[in-house]
Length: 122
Image 1 (tube, one colour):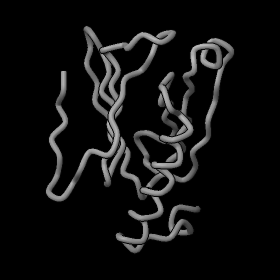
Image 2 (cartoon, rainbow, N blue to C red):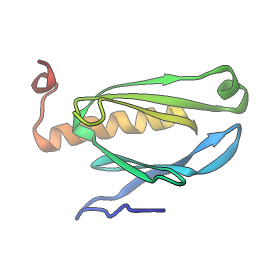
Image 3 (spheres, one colour):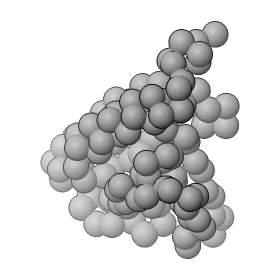
Image 4 (spheres, rainbow, N blue to C red):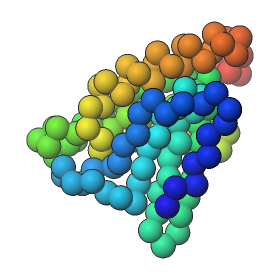
């Protein structure tokens, strides 16, 4: 299923699958690198999305009752990316730790690229 080809100097920091209850769903995979967040999904129809970290504007955590019971949660990622303005990283284990990791990497990537958040506000 994987179409992920990393760029030069790009490292995988976290990888995980969407969960149903606590069971891994092999048809939705999330990968966080030091440059981007990648989403691979599909069974009959495969799709691959990428959100560059410096484009991420806001990250929030959401937990439904079943997610709270089974120890999972979802991230809602808002970005300045035109093709993916809102992304739901759904039903994953360790959602709080992932949110912190993404936030740290977003700040680092913005400073590395020399991008300010004000450049995204219209």
